[in-house]
Length: 360
Image (cartoon, rainbow, N blue to C red; front, side):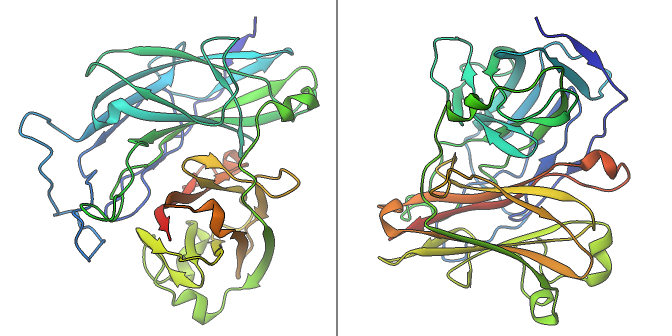
């Protein structure tokens, strides 16, 4: 049985975001998220949303969603847990409480910034990268257990272990009554530490497969020019160079165009470019997703490793073939920090490019 011990009190980062901004929480125990502004798109041509927008979810629905999540054995004091790995399959009990649309919640795990496969509750279950729960009742505790076998980490290593919770993952615009996602698919996270007393089994890397949807990939650090700074970045507009020592910025473009809620690709491959810049020294791993599943290249790689540097922007380019798009799929990117503990006084949290509906 794995042992758990409490380490120094963890940090709570809360970014309450309005229009098309990612709502992110980096991990303390006993985290609650009330989502008052989670709105579905109305289907109008203007796919942006403002904090003043309202949507009638029904007079009896209350707030659109409330999600409370934590490791089941955590106390109410907050803080970061450290899990001790002794080998084999690891059990990680969790507890959810939700209301409204948040009862439709997807869960995933990251270790050292990379998505890892897991099972839910039963050892006989299939390994998967994403699992969706449809909770039946408002304000009722729901207990479940992640079962996973780490495939990276040597004895003596301590890596980050993050659980992500995706709000209403089943939603996808139909391009008739809705054309975007609003605040749906936001992903607050809880992050703890995972200490290896033995080496992880390398064969665990083959427990599940990502979608082989990346036919070309490249990455480079580019000088942060005035042209790049002037881009109307989805998450916060143009960049002020003075802010980059205190925050991280991320932007996703498709075929060289700004893409906010949806993108018509036609029959051509989709070329996605992700920009990531900000606090020097922060290490991120970025993964791309179709319908909430991680995608990979021909070698099975699912993550880009990048270290942010002053005066540069990390650009990640991938190409997705048209046959992977079909009638339409949800596409987004997640950048997970690997060394947030090195920046205790700065908002080093995960960055998520908002969901985009790509269709032909």
